[in-house]
Image (cartoon, rainbow over all chains, first blue to last red; front, side):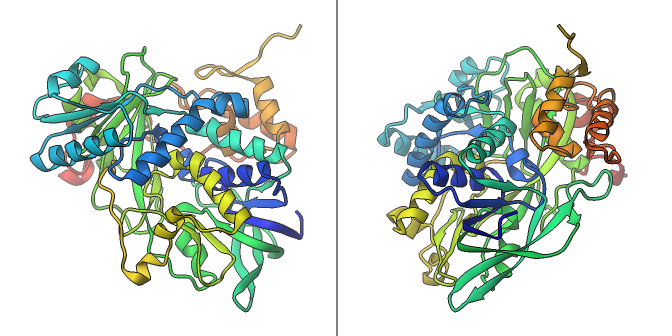
Length: 399
Length: 94
């Protein structure tokens, strides 16, 4: 591996790879992306692949419109099939609170130019005839939202970045930093290998520590970001939160949109492979990084899904797994340069939306690093808001 | 012309595709699984995991790491049966 790089990106998930690719595309090819495990081993390989613009803030709506546009062109630009399918997102509300929140979000989305429609329950059933609308009071539908298959999306960015000269080093963990004054001068790394048999998620050390000198560090380690930041004495307010998911046997195509129930956090969609992929909110979850599966999740998901679509009762679950959302106290990301060290750029705290936001955020982060300029968005999403108390909000969080 | 050699029948993964993954540097079983999708179909790896591990071992000259992290359930289970489990998902409900 090289002994120096202009930019070291920590985390070869979708956020880190999209940023590296966009840096290289703009001429900054002296980039090293490191990851403690294998590609798709973290949240980027464990999420449901949803890509939507139905959010409750103008910022998220605008960003996600751009991300969806990038997804549409991704296969042609990256020369890889990501199984992108725009079947829309159908949100369901069952309580007066959630119905009101949905109405407000849709009004805002319409002002932002989205073609989201507020629906009566019977209209939702016309979009998904198999749906039981018992208890549903309101729904919303945006036909432009969609789903992708996450794995090829990650590989696509990795290959495109490598083709432009970026080095992507998997099985390489960060163990510390070298600093001088207010700057990071090098990242200390150590090789890893697969963990114990049947527990490959937990990679283990496999070699000597070495250093890579650098000018900039971009932290894209998702739920692992706080523990990496702590190595350079930066306290981040985000924390990991386990989310479980499962997929069924493949079925013939019958389900158009991703259906999301704002009341119990149920969501499900049909992938281009035919499987029904979905999850549901489970509370409480184990503290910290935990990627184990539970039978309690399967039971709750099954009850919730069979209530929503009774015909799913005969369909079999093939596999379940788990990954970590990267949650912040005010439901908004932590992005951009920080005060100290001054050459550390954050790109974490994406609230379980990191995958869908990476296409647009990779572009913005690359521009931020190259121009050294802070946009209004990056100022708002900066870590500094936790010092000044100017916190934000976002109510359209699912799963 | 060489006939296609299927390693994973559920997900249509051929020997050539596994070789391509290895040639690209994906020399561990978890990466090969994620690059090719082998082992994620109906049988969940019951038929293909040993074949893919054998190819990996042959090509890399390293001892196979077997298997990839298994995902529950052990056998496909209908959602209706899972829905009838207790709030904690089974054994701990008694």
